[in-house]
Amino acid sequence: MFENLINFIQETHKTKDFIPLHEPKFVGNEKRYLNECIDSTFVSSVGKFVDEFEEKIANYTGAKYAIATSNGTSALHISLILANVGQSDEVITQPLTFVATCNAISYCGANPVFVDVDKDTMGLSPSALKDFLENNASIINQQCVNNKTGKVIKACVPMHTFGHPCRIDEIKDICDKYHIFLIEDAAESLGSMYKNKHTGTYGQIGTMSFNGNKIITAGSGGCIITDDEELAKKAKHLTTTAKVPHKWDFYHDMVGYNYRMPNLNAALLVAQLENLDSFINSKCKLAEIYKDFFNNVDYIF
Image (tube, rainbow, N blue to C red; front, side, top):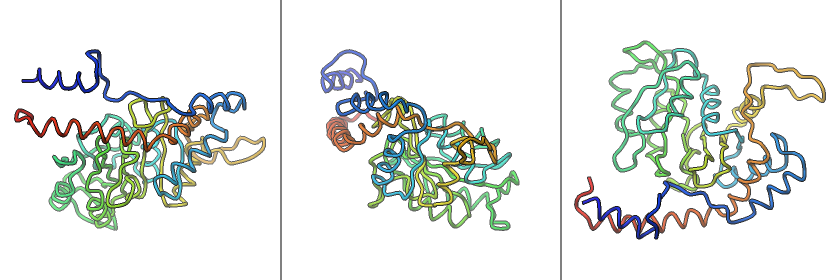
């Protein structure tokens, strides 16, 4: 029965060779901007393309601030630090996700708590989240405490799986009620809107990834988006080794991280952003082809 499915996929993509989940497309100004970046000699973490990318991604998503990072995992890690997640705290997330989500939680010495996903969105289920908290948590001194472990549930990290938005507005309401810091893992959902707002802008913080399998890519890269000025400033500070600005003195006022996005990567992303809408349209058309096929078969479960 799967032979028909395989034939359909091969015919749709006009090949019998390996078909990747996603194939990056470099069809615009990528080479031009890379050459410009190389000619400028600013190829590391300082350069005009980093600033331009941060401005454009903020404008595109509707967030007030964007902070470019080396990858999506680093964006998650810094976001959890900004949420004051620390040793032995707990962070609610979903089991259907990439390991980076739980790795970032573990970097903070915290423990993931898994809450199920909704079948239709493949993202964290607000009803499952509500049931879990009602049966397992209490509000003590403006903090959410797990009754069974005695640990503080500091944050919640839902993911918009394959770019399909979860019911993030409902999740936000629940997190607000329980004093839980909401971080959206929007690694896969650039260009995805939910109730006229871009994913990643419902929580206090949203994170994105620009790995090779994402809708736009620079080979690597990530970013943090937020409307909170103080969180944005601290995110920028922490990702640039917590160095206090000075012409020659190297003074770092806290433990920081070298999570900066190189100007080379940003140059690629600025070019990729110019074609983002066409990439999305192409994927939507392909999705409709797959949808029509699956609507006419009865063996898919």
